Length: 84
Length: 234
Image 1: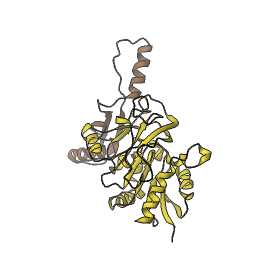
Image 2: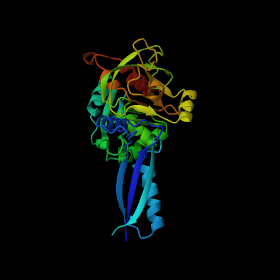
Image 3: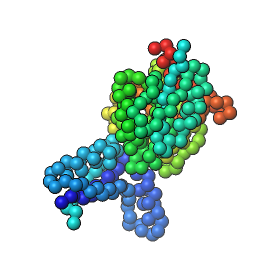
Image 4: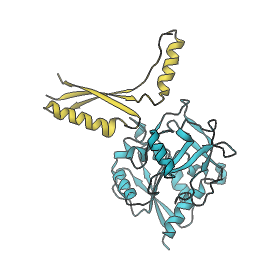
């Protein structure tokens, strides 16, 4: 059974997230004064046709490092689920 | 003597490829050759230029998908052998994604896409791309980008400084490197860097758009000319 990798890519804390800042200000302007920060990332769903969890995990890690994130300014994390 | 052949890579979404071709062709004894992203053949080019634009729509991150195109595998090999590679704007982003240059470009500090003239100073004139400039020159060369905010970890910046790899910095009209003169938030006002070997240069400003009097500035010409002379003399 294939796996779905749900991959999140986020900007590192040290990187100014100008999109997030704009959203944060907009939310404050809407009256949500308790919203203290907003940071925007990417969500990528990949279906991996592997039977073994370890193998799917290896591929998810590899593609996240190679293409889906830029380690200079981004972090990634993922969850693996069986495709139903 | 045969013409110097300069390869200009064309990705889907490149939009400064013809400007670059036009600028290159304006030098005597130099001929541009266009290289399509799906090819593996550099067609005998003696230098490669990665032009500005939005390769692959800037999907995922600027330059991230272009980096894996067939032509880039050849360009990376070409660069590793020590041949000259110049990346302008999106081309700079591709070079960073390829690992040929260090660091990354994130969104401009003030969120805006910037399309304007900037002043920059060639702070290292000992490279093959800048030998015809003086370090006191204040150049007027335009930028046009949304993601030109240069970032690298502090150790990397120190190492770039130490090895004299920072080639262009944003300045004010007097050539002073000030915070106000920094258009996009780049660390240390960095506008362009070179690799340790000295054969791969990336910069955000567009020298090809400052290569004809009609365009308001000729300050980009010495960059191309330095490179072409270096090739002829090599």
